Image 1 (tube, rainbow, N blue to C red):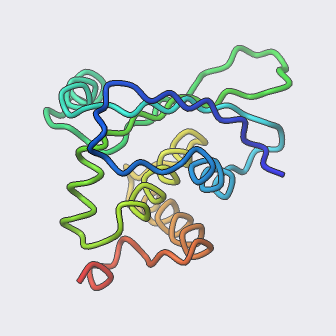
Image 2 (image 1 turned 60 degrees about the vertical axis):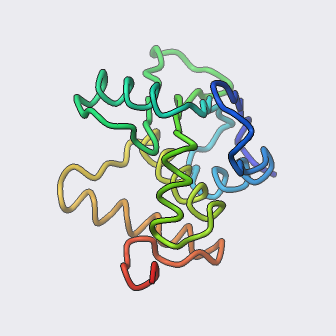
Image 3 (image 1 turned 180 degrees about the vertical axis):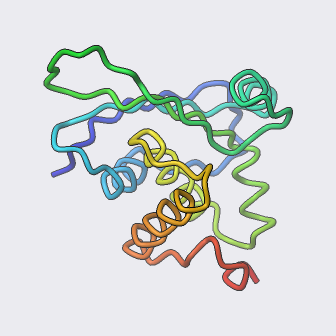
Length: 157
């Protein structure tokens, strides 16, 4: 039984994208959630304009990015369900990257959602040692889904 109680909000998107199902998203996130109590995650799927705007506002980078993670800072009280935070994904960027990297769109969604939930749990890739630890964890989780290491260029050829 999954500890993830997922809130999935899909807005600002057209029907031209192959989006994973709620069940698939929940399964992927459950593999990468290491908490001990149920949690919620809000997921927003946005267009390029909003992804670019958010990336500029929060990361000072002026381009549409694939995934942004916004960890929730909880007040110091015990809650029965933990809210990890929000993930914002740009379907246009996910589709384009999957095509460029020659991977399935679904596998790329899985990778980015796993990457995002790891950020919500405090993992990062700013420093080399942090990046190595986070990527190693992503690779192990993706192996459970029979998805090849996304960080090896040879897997994209």
